[in-house]
Image (cartoon, rainbow, N blue to C red; front, side):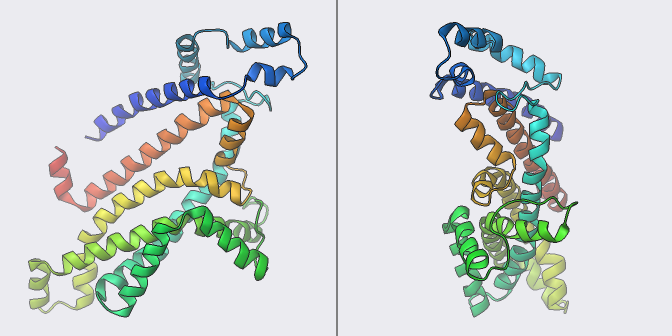
Length: 313
């Protein structure tokens, strides 16, 4: 099953990369004119167009790009002249830190909140957790980010509101500059984890085998942690995988709001500047990472829930 999923990634990435090529055709403007300058002669523009291969039919350009990409050559940025792989490698680490940090925060907050809400169904902790979960799902991450900037950076002056410092240079400054973006990006994941674990725990605690476990005199903590939570947390993992994949998309906006030099900001700048080699390299890689993250989550899910292994065969 895993091998089938892995093989299915190849056509998916090819389709996405071809769609990106199609989209670049419809982007307004002409990158040859942009590179040559508005006052450049028609001959100079045509010379650049031929040098970049822009006069070739789209299928020909695409096949050539795939051939180079397989060899690790994604071309060069039209503006910085750096290799696309080097641009992506230098920005990727920032986005990865942002996404992993938001995932850790979501697990640290969402899992306990869901357990507390599920164990106290109908009581005030359940109502408070459900209220915040509904709030987290409804409010976009960039709005949460702006609120965090206003409160913690502008009013309380506790942390800087923008910029990035590498962890190796100063762990303290890194934490100060990353904590707000991580919280902003993790909001939806915290909310959905809380709701999913709460719902799963409430359903599981009402099943016959849980009643049997209680009738045997097992402590409530053992019943919840050893029996109920194992079943309840399995669907939540699917939520985590989907949200991790979404986080790479959400990072585009959050990096803009907090001025982080990650892949999202690189992508936005590439769209504005019509830097096609960057776009053609970043988007398929982002899709590839999202699919792999989903696959990893599915494998973990099947390990925790043997019924899924049986159904997948």
